[in-house]
Amino acid sequence: MNLSKNLAKETEKVSKDLNSVESRRDIFCRLATSRVEKVAYALDILSKLSSRRSDYTEEDIKNIKKFLQSELDKTLAAFTPANETAKKTFVLKA
View 1 (cartoon, helix red, strand yellow):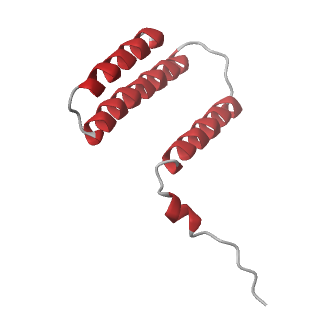
View 2 (cartoon, rainbow, N blue to C red; view 1 turned 30 degrees about the vertical axis):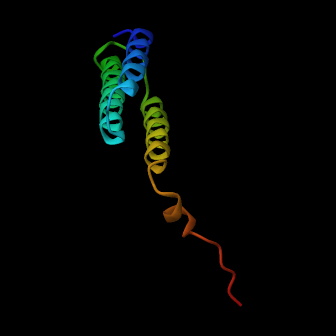
View 3 (tube, helix red, strand yellow; view 1 turned 180 degrees about the vertical axis):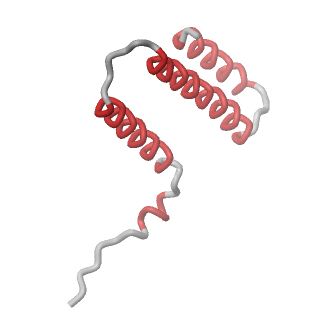
């Protein structure tokens, strides 16, 4: 999969679809499906490093996992409505 080709196709499809009647939900589902599939593909490619005679340590794997988990957490947090995150306020009690 060439990501630049896929991005070009996705951009072209989005511009064409904007001219047709497509609900915001349909657009979200189409784009989310495409992007999640790309992430899954990238993770599959990453996992193939484990089957090679690669020179990696448990610490390397721990660092990769920590980074990927952090990125996933940030991504999912972006879907939390602003009012839910605003509920966490600092209160100093006497």
